[in-house]
Image (cartoon, rainbow, N blue to C red; front, side, top):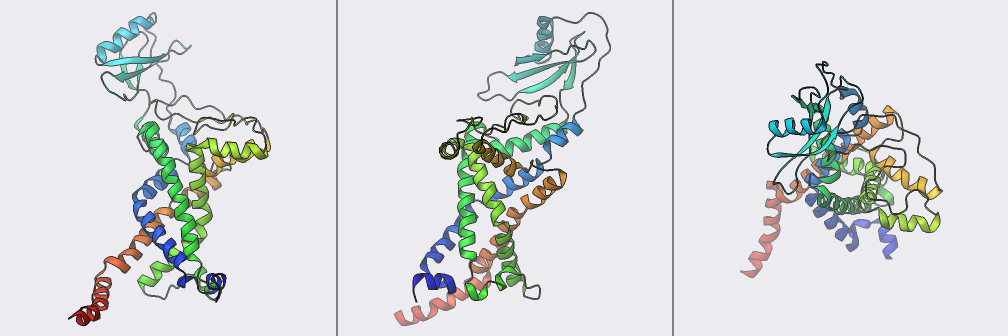
Length: 347
């Protein structure tokens, strides 16, 4: 029987499949925590623009109690309230009764975190944070998903781990192939089987139906961190008009991304329809849309939220399979039994 006949009918006997199984197993174990964090945080921020709009309290209105303070006077008042912080930005509204927003950073810190505060423009009194804790939680989740809470270094690590997710999905599809005689059986779940077989069916079937989504999320995740190779390839087939050598994680033209590292997101504005650009631009724009699920209405986004929780499910079922085969009491006893004839023959 030739290699291709065995691959088609009995792939379990191929050394290549066994090697891919080991790659899939150890890659999945190594990426387990990352997959859980990136999937849960990704599902949590699918509706981030809608949540920002709904949770944003609007401008802080203060009573007019006299002439507005100068910028120097506001700086002096902020320095008195926050003596160990430096002011990085001051935003003053054209409305007289709206609080002034001041961004500050702690001195003596290598990577200071920007903090937004609201200040009464008439007396310099600190009015509290410029955003509610719910907005801060969303920003934290976005930073976790994009930068792994580690800035540019975390973003690059995120891109490298996304490459491993692509490898995990491809090797999973390769070892899923059961052969032509068992194809229908591998697409269904036997609910009458024991829990070990049931768990195996869940991992296999859900993994097959989720392959396309996990593969797309992995590839688009790599693109959002390392866009240049993709842009070079696409530009060979369709000249890019809008996406030529863009910085990573940049939104399509006309689509606004809320920056999470600045501490305070800008006010929510209406999304403008982006210019179409060339076919290559449209192709790359869909990388962004497919990764975040923002190409449709709320039903599409809700689907992305639900599907985004499938990778952690696959990790849990895969970990149970590994436990049953390697670490369980039955697996250890089976290995001891297989080793007994070798020990007796040596004796």
